Length: 505
Image (cartoon, rainbow, N blue to C red; front, side):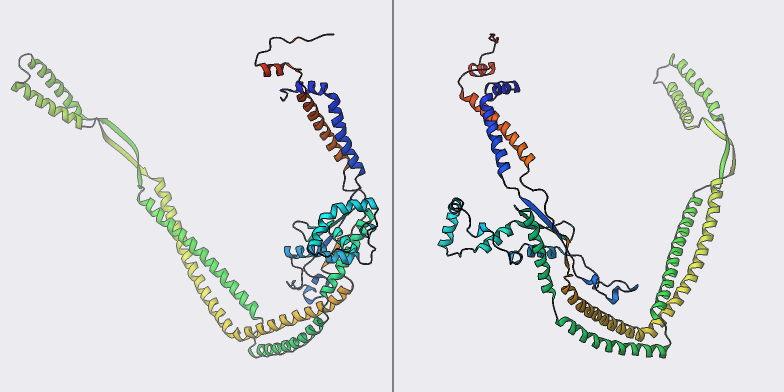
């Protein structure tokens, strides 16, 4: 049964302190001993910078002076597949074998270990050896086995959002980790230089450059003769200036139309408001009582008194009473329809709102008329500029065609000049190991092992020791049939605890 509170755990730990201490010290000792006996593992790393090409290292016409950079003469961003390809090449078994060439095979792979170690290895590898014999798999040579083990300890990762690859190698020999990465990077750069070597490229580009130069000179001569014949100067600048002027005039005309539309809308609104606004407004009003009301009230009171007096002598349905009721109802109806007050005198004055609306209407009408005149003048200027542009385009069609031919021939010629220079410089770059990949950070001899971490392992061993000690104490408590706590008595009998008696020595 699990303890119900921490006091029970403390009591169990104290009663079973001997077995808990032995279990905890055993676990901690095993962890500490394994940590101290485990050989240290060292790790060294280097960083490889990958670029799309080497054009920034070449002397190219597009990179001289104030010429704008050309997309074929500057670096493009390195793609993810380029980085992955380089990573796979660095960690390939082929490159590892190149790096291990000329080095003696370690004794551990040359079957030079002792008999005891050899027997243990043979027992471990017995199933694998049987599988190889069953399927006729050739046995690995000591150098191949060494290369495979080195490849397993070699890793390359791409740093996110960058064109840098981190290469890491782990070994129990701290100096060997750095030496192997040096040899690996050297073979890697040599392999890249062999891939970039192309001796026929320079000759091909030189032939194409001479051909394109002749064609460019011919097209430039045709353009020069046409300019002398027609007298047209810089056609593009003239067209751009004229188009810019037309654009400005059209923009101004559009703004003027918008202003006219706003003025006209304001005129319409002011006219509507002016029509619903009176020109004069009431200033003072005097009211007196209605004279007809004053005359009818006494008559109604007299008829009511006469009706009351007749009711003392006649029945309510008599003819005389009906006549009086008819007169009384008629006069009361007249009283209900009459106004109690009547206007006798009114004075008016000029409405200031009407005057303001009238002034604003005249201003808006004047602005709309001025805008229309401005718009007509702008339309005349736009028509004149369009006619001028049409004449310039008509006269410059042939010249534009010749200019495009010159531009096309010049671009092709410059491209092949650049390619020729790149091919010539590429051979020199290859011989000097200046490639599109470079070692940005060379490997260094590691100062501290990466595994095992003694403080971390001891801390984990301490935690495990506490857990195993507690588990051992609990197991011993459960194995003992004696009852040591009131909670166990309550759980076993189901009876409440009345009192606890403690034995005092």
